[in-house]
Image 1: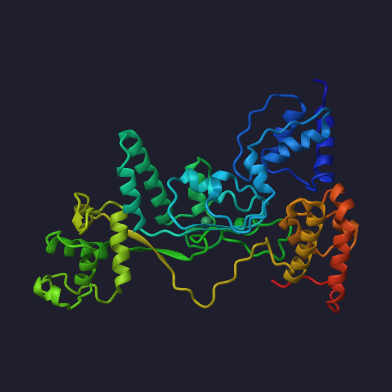
Image 2 (image 1 turned 45 degrees about the vertical axis):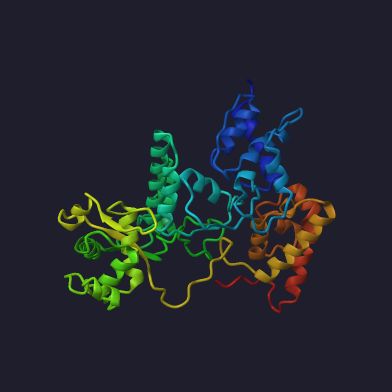
Length: 434
Ligand SMILES: [Zn+2]
C-alpha cells in the first residue's frame, strides 16, 4: 500500500461533502470506508439506522470498477412504497429513513426485538417517538404461551426474555440507558441525583442550532413524566387481605375488600369483619389494581389459571410482609397544565414552509418516478425551514444537499423559499420563535 493517510482521506471527505452533502461521518463510518478504499476485507455489523448504506455507496464513488450490492430484495422494494402508517411488518423490512413514530400495542417478546423495531424510527437522525403500551395484565397471557413450549431450556430462555422486558417497562431508570446497557453500552445519566438536567446534556442535542434548541429529554423517565413511589405498605395491605380471605379470591374481590365495598356478597362472606376491610378506601380501585399488578409482575404473589383465577401468596411474600423488602411502583405524574406538543424536528421550524417544500418534493418525486426521500430527506427540509436559504450558495450549507442535488433541485427549492418569504412581510431576516 502506498496510499498515505492524507491521500485517501481527501477524496473521501470531498465525496462525502459533494455527493452526499454531509460535513462529517457518523460513528465508525470513516474507519469502514477507509478500510474498503484500502481494499481490506471488512465484516461490519451495524445497528439499525447506523448508516450502513453510505459505507458501500461512498467507496463506489472513489474507486474504479463496479460496486455490486446484494441486499434482501423486500427491504429495497419496501423502500419504494410510501407507507404512511405501517403495521407490524417489521420482519418484512420497513426500511424508510423518516419513520417518526413507532407504537407497540403489545409487550414485545424480548429486548432485542424491541430494539430492532424501535430502531426503525429516526434513521435520518431526526427525533422520533416510540410508545410502548404496557399493562401488567399482558404478563399472564404471555406466560400462558410460554408455558406451552415443551423444550425446558427454551422455556427458561423465554421467561428470562420476558422478565427483561418487564423490567425495562417498570424500572425507574432512563429507557435509553437501559436499552444501551442491555447491549453493553454506557449512556450517561441525563439528570443529577437531585433530578436536574446535567449541563453537559443541555448542549448535546444539537450543535447546529444550540441557540434555539431546548434540551430534549430522551424518555418519559428523563422528562419526569413518571415517578417511583414506595408502595411497600400498600403491598402489605393487599397481601394481608389475600391471607385473611384464605387465598380463595380473585383481583376484583380483594380490591373490593381493601376499599371497603359494602356489597351483599362481602357481607355474606363476613369479609367486612376482617382487619384489612376498608383500610385502603382513601385510594381508588385503579391504585389497588396497580399494586396487585406490580406484585404479580415481580412474582411476589401469583394468580392461578382456570375459569376462576384467585390470588395466592408466594414464599417471597413473607419478605415484603415481614422481611423489610420494599415494593416500588411507577406512576404517571399528574400533568400540571398542558403537555408541550412533541416536535418532530431538532428545534423549531416554519411549518407552513415545510408543507410547501414537502408538496414540491412530492411533485418532483412523482415526475422522476422516485420516492420523495430520494429528492431530500425530512431532516434536510426541516433545516431549510430553519435557515431559509434563498440562494444556491446558502443552500450548500444545508445538511444533505450535495453538489448533484444542488444542481438538480437547488434553484427550484430556493425559488419556493423566496416565494414563501415574499408573502411574509418584513421577514427577510427572520428567525423562528421557540
Ligand atoms: Zn431517558
